[in-house]
Amino acid sequence: MSVESDNLENALVSAIKSQVEDQDIAVAFSGGLDSGLVAGIAKEYARSVTLYTSGKDKSYDVVMAQEMSENLGLPWLHIPITEENIEARLREMISITGTSSPLTLSFELPLFFVCRTVREKYVLSGQGSDELFAGYSKYIGLSNEELDRMRKADLGKLISSTIPHETKVADHFNRKVLYPYLDPLVTMQVNAMDLKELMPVDQDHRKMLLRQVARNLGFPFIAEKKKKAAQYGSGTMDLVRKVASDKGMTYAELVDQIYKDIFE
Image: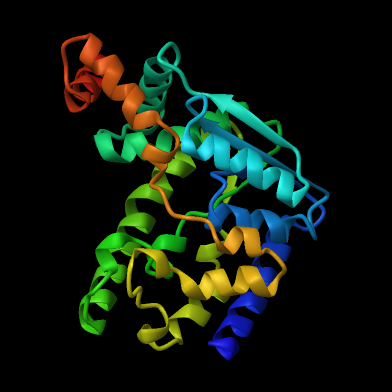
């Protein structure tokens, strides 16, 4: 794995350096492996790096992000997501993007809060890492053929649906989201690898190649981080379900109602 991790390290560092050099950078920061690693590398090349974590008070992401920000020695800001502000932001995001998928909206809420808040023009994202490095639980135990097919399908959805949604949000707030894991330098390196190097054997051994890169770069505390989905790690799913429940609706019904209010 050392040759692959060395090559990947060089590609990722080169990609991030080219994107952030001499710029003031915001990082959409969950305190996990993906955003932690790009933040740690960006610190070496950007003019300034500030970490922003949006989420419910004391949510998993908020607690982990504050801890990791101290380990990285970078300034950190918590952007609160609350019962009082989440419906208004959900409505605002739907009106800007036209997105109607409840799932997409739930995991995109944290980035929306970040883009709405930051002063920096450039927002560094860990998006694409799970698809590229087979980080999802659903990939465990697949054959090489199944893994190849599923990763390609998920990357396709990311590029055709998720990235356009995020671009609309970023454009609205005059921001630009940077995706170093989707940089051609990185994707070409990963695509040249044997799928066996990416295959997760169990829950605790996902994205091992990326974790090795973190260790190589002197970030063992990043390499050890556990995975939690954005909508759950940030607490947004619990909050939107509570707001919907208080109205006598499911979350999907609330999204449908907001969508109809705006577009019909």
